[in-house]
Amino acid sequence: MDKRNHLLKTLLIVTFCFSLLNAKAQTRLDTAFINQQLNDAVKQIKVLATKTPEHMLPRTFDKGKSVHSETGWWTSGFYPGTLLYLYEYSNDKELLQLAQQKLKILEKEQFNETTHDLGFMLYCSFGNAMRITGDTAAYRNILLTGAKSLATRFSPITKAIRSWDFDNFPVIIDNMMNLEFLTRAARLGGDKKLYDIAVTHANTTMKNHYRKDMSCYHVVDYYPKDGSVIKKKTNQGAFDESAWARGQAWGLYGYTMMYRETGDKKYLKFANKIAKYILQHPNMPKDLVPYWDFDAPNLADTSKYAAYRTNRDVSTASLMASAFLEMSTQVKGKLSTQYFDIATNIIKNLSSSTYKAALADNGGYLLKYSVGNIPAKSEIDVPLTYADYYYVEALLRYKRLLDDKKMID
Ligand code: GLY
Image (cartoon, protein in one colour):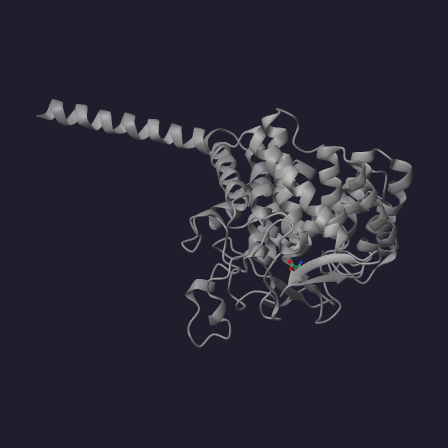
């Protein structure tokens, strides 16, 4: 009897292991699948281009209407950035020309000292333009001037870059994403201080934005005269102590990027802990497309956001896919496989008709169902330029991994 039990147990374990292996083999996407998504994206972004006025940038598509922005809006770099990524993939000159038209109107933002979003606006656009075309003469000075403008917002007292010009000295988790602009500008021959500012900001954010469970606050407001913390709160999340989903993903991507940029292992350890929080969250949906706030499904009926308990945020999923792909190259063994599988699943799900729009639908955007800012009642259940940008980035990263190429230059 014991022997039979043992045999049965062994058989069950072997079957289980085989089914796991098979599941992995099934979830790995192949080059044909990735190319298909990128080919579709090339067609779709040309639709978006026809809907975009010459002096504006696409922002979203809401209630059947295309919404555009001026160059000063924080998302202005994502559309040219996506065009450039897709040009990199397809070598289609029309995409490069469309991007260059937008770069021309965006150029003036290099002098903008009123926003912390210059990394999104200028690095996703001009940074990619320089990397892909190799035209240093055209783009280097714009990047260096822009990075200098961003650095004017750094305070050696708070040891952080100021996000917004209201409140006292607010710093939002999103700002982690703008640090790559500074480290790259320093590498391009800009002031070495730009790199130091990025490192200092990342360290301050580690210290003050994160809770014990490794979720993060959206906003930390500092007292500018001595750098003490006045208040930790939210702006776009469900409540001050909640875990606003995109904020968790900005942090995940941000610390992963900071490990790549500095080689400092403490950032990788930190990113791994953020990953654990996100992946083990009981409210993470099976398809890995998070609710707009991890606490949203538990909101009480009395909450002003109770009506939004089930809204997903596709932009968070896109960001996570791209970040987990990079993380899969930074860690080894089982964890690397786990991160790669997570990214695979997200990409597969975002590429399904549940989330991906049919050609010429959705105002020309690739993905549906993102959330911009629920507390401000703005951009709810709509496509967003950054959801598309990080989705395309993830597809390109995946393709590079399949081709055994270095994922990031
Ligand atoms: N950086 C603004 C946002 O994530 O909505």
